Length: 357
Image (cartoon, rainbow, N blue to C red; front, side, top):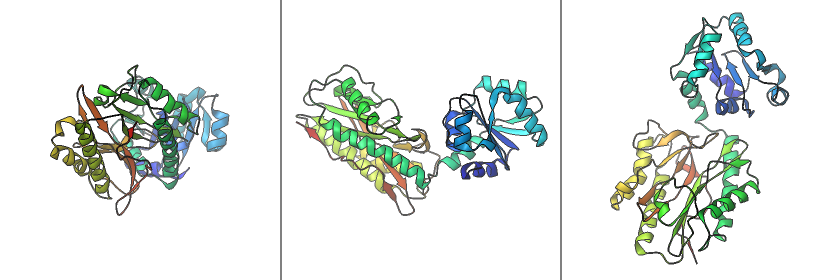
């Protein structure tokens, strides 16, 4: 068993005899093997990865043949394993398992007490939330690709270009310069659509006086990057400059507040207070940030409702924004690694106001 599986096995003993993990993201996190089908069985003493014939050979090479089984007769094999190892209580990921999967488990494995509390999900989160040096390196590698895409797109954006063209150019650059995939659906919006935090790129064209907001990222070896930049095109108003300066100050204050031990609520407040003091509090509706790793949105969160405390090894985004409906909006986003004394900003990309002429 690798270190992550061992850590999970140790945690499981507090609430179950074993755990069954079906979600693709959790299976990848614990095995390092990507597959659309599979089930990971973990006990305090051992682990088995079940997958179908499409993946068994590759899984054996990646994980080790002693840990891999063909899932053709999954429930029969599980029943035999449970009986041989006196396993009575099995934990499930209650936030990822479907009702149909749960009902099938109950029908095929009678006599097993399935733990459907959030115990397993919390145990997995507690392990995933702290990033190893290897994970940080992969996230930074993905981020550097995104930054190169930003440098490239500055020479591409001009009046007449559509949002879709900007999106496709960003995506093509990342995919042709080392990204395995995109972190998420790229946001590239201009003009009045920048007032929508998750606006969908369309046929709107860039015009003189517009802001262009781009929220995007690259995926490398299963790990995501996430960044947002807003740039101006041509002549913009004093109000646009004021809003941009306010968001930038809020974003810097949010980053400066980060350190081991700060709550997600207080980290959010550090950025939000700047925006509220400038009179735009009602125009910042979303949280200040979120964790990034094998998922683009994961724990911890930075928001007024966050239940997290930031610790050394967490990676979070800091992305405050101001959105004036039917007019314009601004968002600026960096990623940061929490350290004992503060944070290490993982994003190495200009964020002072850029005006493209």
